[in-house]
Image 1 (cartoon, rainbow, N blue to C red):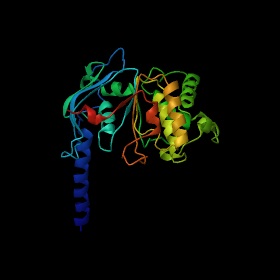
Image 2: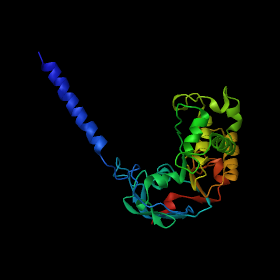
Image 3: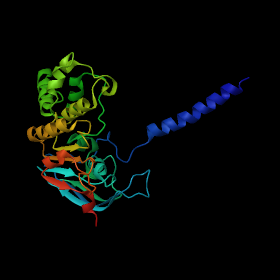
Image 4: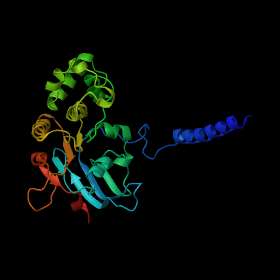
Length: 280
């Protein structure tokens, strides 16, 4: 009579073992660790030296091979190239979501592997193609960008002023003021009550509200129409006091018989870089 119950207990024990194994695992890139170098002053120079990388799930597909490039502080850089050339990979390696298999990545001459992971990521603002918003107000979502910054414990009024300034810079203040409750409007689970373009603008505001030294835009305007994209990014790059910016290009239809990847916003960048040119 106890056979079904014993079988259920056995399955639960097996599931619990895997669960505890996951909980007890110490990742090689530990964002919760307090160890690691913290620089007193960050310029924002990013350097890749002979970097090789492939994703763990695709070991037979090399993404970067002996890649070398330097992105100076104060530059606006556009990463351009075909799909699979390593544009998003460079963003992920800069954020240290992964470590390179070979070579070294430096921030201001220091190996990022020696740095505190949480501190490193606090120096970087990131906006991805599919931004994630939380089920709270517009203001609450943007204020998440202040966590870990020198304004985290600022007064409520000061934080709100920073939020509004970031939203103006991200060209989203006007549509926010048209929402039922303005900045206090709840965006719904994963931002479902906002359009794709509106979510991306709020995500950009969240990324720049803490004035990061490095700003990474990975297809950050892909959900905007051509007119809005041509307006939003120049305003963002002109108004935001950012030391270093990089973004992906996205594919558009070829204008002639030559197949190419082109985005209107690429023309606003001061420097363009193809990851394939860093291979030897």
